[in-house]
Length: 454
Image (cartoon, rainbow, N blue to C red; front, top):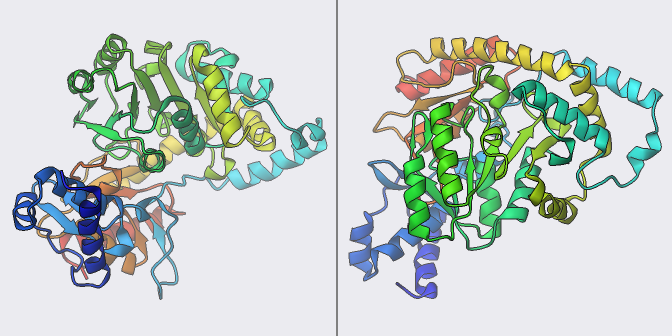
């Protein structure tokens, strides 16, 4: 393998050529073997060079097509950042993020704040709270989860976190070690990728089928890593971005592998509320080793910044220590607001409405994108749309951005080192009306079909 300095020399030289425009967006980088032969490098070193360019958002690998220079405006890192319309575009439509907020939620917030201000011990919200949250808030979450699953949840296993991303951050602090591999699906959540990159936690990709990650591949991976693999991160119920729901048989097979190799399972249920008849969560199948993250950002509202982390009892001390090291505790005012809505059935009512909205928007998307091969769960807030050759995702994303429409290239979800399908994720939850969504999707179809590119 080349010395680190030599490896970085190649990375910096290619990065400078991209920045100077000498390697334009869409340029295909040489095949790895050709680059290795030209520069006298090992192929593994070239793989590392191209992977670092991809990590910086300067290149993207596409299945069966190679590695390409990517447009700086649509780098993989930008896909997880806040989005704004392109310069000169007065209004935009966000089809990159899902913020499924209902019109009636604003008035519900106003009334809840009035009620909370009028009663109770307000001084408690100005003081430190326990790391896992007030008992009343943990009880509210436990009752809500019990209604969902039909199985009692002990409040002492619940930790109140400051949103789903914070809960994932807590789990990486508590469970993961720098340099120790963590298994993820080949397409995984960009927020988990971002945390792992900051902590030098290598992610190892598991192949997927339409039923989710492959347990046999996980078993093989465990044998390959000989005891170093300890943690698996997965989205079994309404995978983002694929929209798949892992069947019970596949979940049981996954649990069997986890028990044989003593793995810890992290179950991200961000979109799971949209599946009314989902199989039991992994937490019920393997409670001794599963950590489930249930965020209220989608069933409630993203500004609520409350999520519930359910963890095995023996791991609670490390989870509490991670809470103390990160934000100490979730904001008690927001936790109390969330508990109020859980207790009085407000959240359940919103979930019912959002399931109906998601189904309606899926119908609109299927109509607007007909004939383009889009796929998605019938009750999800997103669809996958293939980008046919010779078009490239970067160009499609840039062309839509110029029209004031944001979408996400699927490579933003690709595990490190994994080539991504040539596709974009189209989020359906943020536009304020069905009409606005319809108009934006018509333009998406024009660009992807080649009728309106450029």
